Image (cartoon, rainbow, N blue to C red; front, side):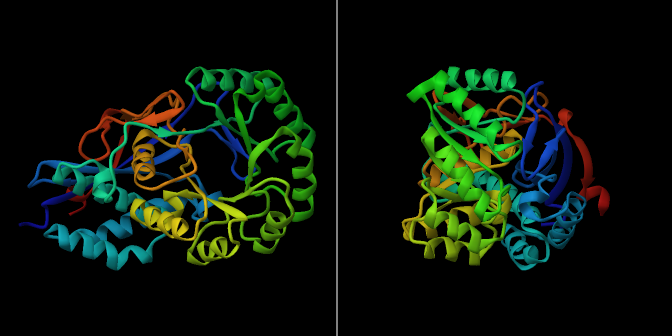
Length: 373
């Protein structure tokens, strides 16, 4: 085999939603477009490609500046450049992954698993030692915006059978949050289940006051009510809050996993591949939470269909409270296709690997290992 039996290509895409669906959270601020990198690992001898995708402009959750994502990806791929077999490819990845941020690791890990699954003729869920499922129960998130936009978006979600709705809070005033939640309760009553995500907007004292005001809307949980990394604040709120508490931005490493488990069920977890460093790591984290009887959500960022499909396949393998897998819904210019939303669920075709298609014409080619060689 030659050093060119594996060919790597990096693509770039900037994804957008229709008007009224602009990504905006207390942590991220307003996001005009989703900055995506897609990786193709082509096994030329087998005639098959594995795909991965990550969103670069999510430093607010990964800690990796947008400008450092592509260099990290290139550093890792260049270390894998001369692999002459699948074993060498995996060994090079394992040896060098720790030298780059987890978000860069995630892109490569996801593409590798997709490649291996396709070569074996298995779905990605099966490659992860699980079973493919026709659908995964999913929630939907209300974009921050005008009340009119909120009403339109929620109506579209409910029309697709989604009854679990998460609302962004902590961006405006607490009165804004109360008004939005009151409107949802007044208009949908018990037809929907509500939760809220503060994205780390509040100090501990403010969080408890705000949660007390929001509890009357019968929320399933409050997500990341305190600053990312402030464990004493999160644990204080989890102990005193009238609502269940979930960690997201603050769940970054093994120490955080251990601390969640030590809280004996007072804190649930939001797992994301970009934080875990790849789909295989996410599944391993979920297994630890299963063993500790800690509830968790398998989620994602707002991102394209390729990234969504990896997270959906992971959710098929483990046992989440629910999937938060709405990220690709409604994107106008997504190069990935095949992710379907209906009846309160997200689904994929039962095909080898991710089960989706990728249209190269909707992306820009940034780097090709053949050209680089």
